[in-house]
Image (tube, rainbow, N blue to C red):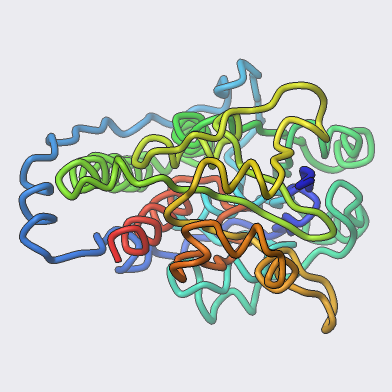
Length: 336
């Protein structure tokens, strides 16, 4: 039985101070294909209009939480990947991080990520003293994970915990942070780029018939699970492809628990696998299931279309930049 593995545990925390200097990478807003079908789909995509937000020191986030600061934050400590994603989208640099692999991607900070301090500790159990050393004006964490750090963190900085349930929440948090940091122009450009990519992606999927291709996103470490349509990544994938993976209900351990036999029954054509590995002897999901006779019969596996993807991006980003890159990668693989 495939059991749900907590991707959040693998999300490295990003801790760094915000400074202007991280411009959006040229490739971050590009589309993946130059085929006639893609060109036609692009021309058919609707024009996207976005309004820059205005600066404010009090904002209400997508979860309905009100955040009030006394001054514009210059140094923001990130304890979850969407924070780093938002800062890069706004042309800012984190003051520290626990997801250095995400920041080091060329479509994020590239080599400049090496200058961002890495905060030690487990996800949800970060070293508070190291966070304090970064002299943050604001700390951003994940709801349900970093709430337990509030008492300690708020001795030196406000703690804002975010909760992303769909990509519109990603946009909402980007807009809220842009108001706090007075980065409306950068927010509008990032949001316009993202919404254009979504429109073009949907048009491309429809034009090529990719919306009828059965796709699966799954993850694994000590155990494995499926990103169901109740999961933010599964919900996102269902916007562009056939994605028959509803939540199975129940508690945390059962909602995304699909057996290999159940996966075979739904016959996915393409699988995207996020393998969380620790140590030199750790195996990827592909290696773990390689000799499983039922796994071998899954169409995506039999046809060489089960792809390992970077977990730091697919499981940790959760921001507009991450979702845009994921869409590019998914469309390219499914098209192939």
